[in-house]
Amino acid sequence: MKTICVEGWRGISHSIALVNQFQLLVMLEQPGLRLYHRDVPFFMKRWNAKEMPAGFSPAEQARIDAIPAPPEDEAIDTLLRISSPFASVLPANQKTVTFMVTECGITPECFDAVPPDLGAYTRDGNRIVTPSRWSRDRLLEHGFDPAGVAVVPHGYKADTFQPLNALDRRAGRAALGVADDETLFLNVGVATWNKGLDLLVQAYARVRQKNPKVRLLLKDHKAMYGLGADRVLAQVAREHPGLMTADVLAGVSLISGSLDQGQLRALYGVADAYVSPYRAEGFNLPVLEAMACGTPVIVTDGGATDDFCPEALALKLPSREGTAADEPNMFGRFLVPDVDALVECMQAVAAGRVPRDTPERLAARARLATDYTWARVTQDLLAQL
Image 1 (cartoon, rainbow, N blue to C red):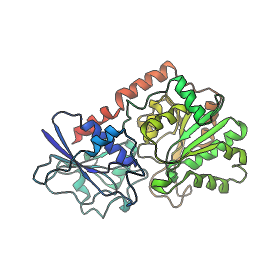
Image 2: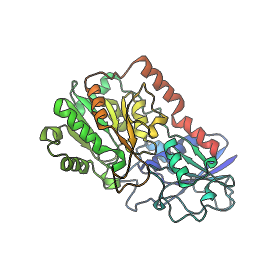
Image 3: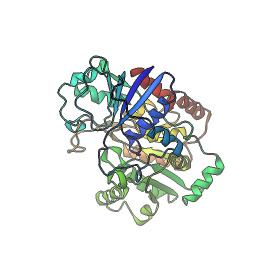
């Protein structure tokens, strides 16, 4: 019997907490595994499960919440830490696997204090797991030993994220007020600079000015992060006078509040494309979930999504490495996706030149179901524990 204790977040919809909870559900099904969980304080005191629920079914959330803390007198084979900031001190004589994810790079603020020994994270059986090659490369640039850093990708919930049937898709679009002949673009990311929502809004506005049947749906994250998509709309309007006309704004819709997994699936399913022109991502889970729902995606080439976005399912935006001239206040590594190419890709979707179902797309989605479900990728995690 192997004993694992997870130190992390559960109960809320923050991305790190969601990853932890998806993995916990899989671990609970593993024979020969005794699982414990020790809750770590949330990064912000105001975060709570009542206002920011994770979106699992009541039965699933009950199973997650019921995982007990370890008894003080029981030996733990492996400690898995998955929260933020990263703990700076590792326990002595205890195998510890630390989940680390970064978008642009590691800074002192990523830790709860300056680590006294960076090598401790990868020495004496300790390991670091990170979800993409992009994130791994940023960790290696910081000085972590490459031999002790493993890429373990995120996954998707295969029993939830599947294509909608034609009837449900039409009903879902009608509920959002989207006509059959309109094109709906979707992004559910947080309105931070690295996500590139400002680039998406710019491109959408240019497409909408030529095609009034184009719509944009964004997720608002004010409750958790204090960042609203309306801030991005105002920013683009200031920086690009004349672009955000009344008609352009009329085509933008915002969804507020927490969404459960089924509601997310419905959004992915009704959209004509999920668009993520990011500058830097640690993984970008919504892109994977959207592809699993049969929705074409438009993503930046050269970043984290290269790991799991096949050409059959994704339109990729040419990009170059960002410099201080692009954003003087930005640290680390980031990409600058081509906005003109983004406009062209969105126009191609609007013109019906990006079909949802072809033999190639169906085969590529089948490979996702083989390689990127939570049941599959959590086995890779367990191999590191």
